[in-house]
Length: 316
Image (tube, rainbow, N blue to C red; front, top):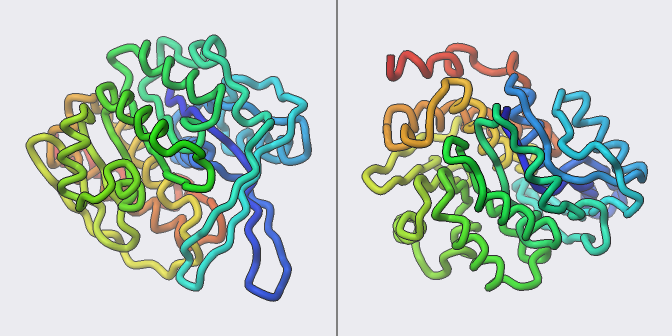
C-alpha cells in the first residue's frame, strides 16, 4: 500500500485572455500524485480531508474512479480549498489560493496515524499540506513515528502565495530531511529551500541535512538525481506541451509506483542503474501528463510496457 498525505483542492483554471472561461479541475499536489500511483496499478490510500460541498463530491468521485482508497472518508461541512490558475503561452502555470477555514487541512494526528498500516510500503507527503495547520503538524508528527521500512518521499512543491511564513516552512522541511528517502524538487523549489545555490550545490546541502536522494526536475531539461556518492541524469522525451499542471506530481508518483512495484528498498536508492531506470519510467509519465490539459496522469495501459517492465532486467 502506498499512502499519499496532503491536500486536495479545485484548480480554477482561467482560460485564454478575453474569453472569460474557467475550468474547474480536481487538483492539489498530493491528490495528483495519489491518482497517478493508482492509475499505474499500485494500491493507493489518500490521507486528506474532503468537504461535503459540490467540489468535495467531485474530488471524492475522482478518487473513487481512479480506485484510490480514502483514509478518512467522512466529509466535512467546511468548504473545499481553491487554487486559481492562469497558464502562460509556454504552458507554465501561475497560482493564487483560497485556503483558510477549509475542510482540506482539517487533519489530526490520530487520523493520520491510522492510515499507516502493516502493509504500507511508502509514504508521500508535501506541498501546501506541510504549510497549513493543523495538517502540517500532524504530518510532521506522522513522519517522526514512521516505521523504518517505509520509503518516505517528500515533495515541497513550493507555492509562494500559499505559504505565509517561508522561514518556518523551510525549517519544517529541514526537520523532515533526516527521515526523507527521496526529496523530489523542481529547480524553483530548490531556489526556495536553499536560496542562492546552483543545483549541484543545493543538492549537496540537502544531502548533508539528511536526505538520502535528491531528485531534481527542470522543465524539459534532464531529470537529475543525487545521492551522497553519485549523480544520474535522464533526458525528458520531447512532447507538445498543453500545460504543465500536475506534471511534477505525476513524475513523483510515477517514480514511487515504479520503485515499489519492483520491490526496491530505501537502501537501493544508492544503485545508479536502478535510479536511472526509475527516472526513465517517471519521466515518461510526466511527459504524457504535459500533453494533456490539467492534471490528467496516464493509466498503466498508456505507457511503453517494455520501458515500465524493463526495470528488473537492469539489475537481474
